[in-house]
Image 1 (cartoon, rainbow, N blue to C red):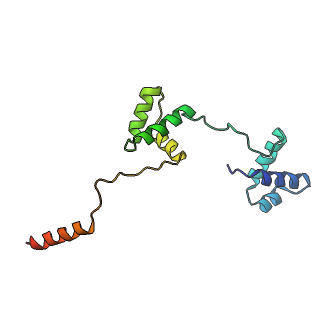
Image 2 (cartoon, rainbow, N blue to C red):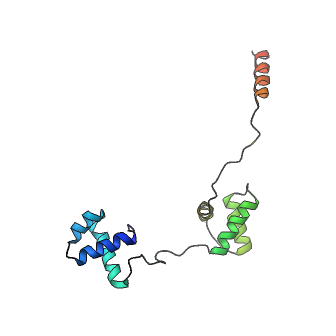
Length: 138
């Protein structure tokens, strides 16, 4: 379902009230006729141009659990999403999927990275390796 900004919904409702057809309004606004119809219907029912909150499925986690996920990850950067999920179930008795943990981390701006295994080679290391390889060729 396409969500129109409140200004566009107001524009569409005004045009419909002025006598324009749903099809002409949909062309003007740039969305389908069904979206215009749904927005006008919602406006007539609620008297508001803004989409109501709370529609759709309820979240699997609450604010406390989301904060727990974020804090645990920040405390131990090498902890995996599976480990965080297991800890959440152990401590908070909340059963969520590993995918949910990843989504919550992504929502708070924490991206997943593969930790580096070793420090990068410096130029002197590369030279030493090349010298060794040339000496021990064949």
